[in-house]
Length: 98
Image 1 (tube, rainbow, N blue to C red):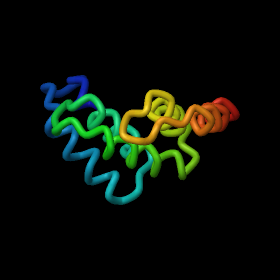
Image 2: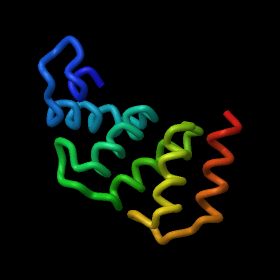
Image 3: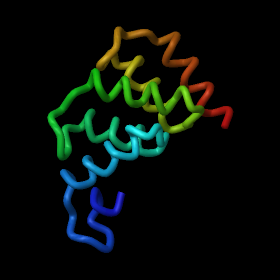
């Protein structure tokens, strides 16, 4: 997040996306969630809500509370996935239980 936010280094969202991508390729849950957020917002990468949902899903599958919450939001809003408020509620519940 240092490059994404410019803390201690010159802000470089493209570099942040590259580094998140490398860590996400290794299955790192925080990186999957952070890269999902960047994809959803289109910061440093082309905006892609379908990819964002997939990345959040991989983080959520590892029990990552933020990933579960973020994927829940995608289901609630129908962004990148077919809208499903029941699934959204399930994911919000899993995140809250942590």
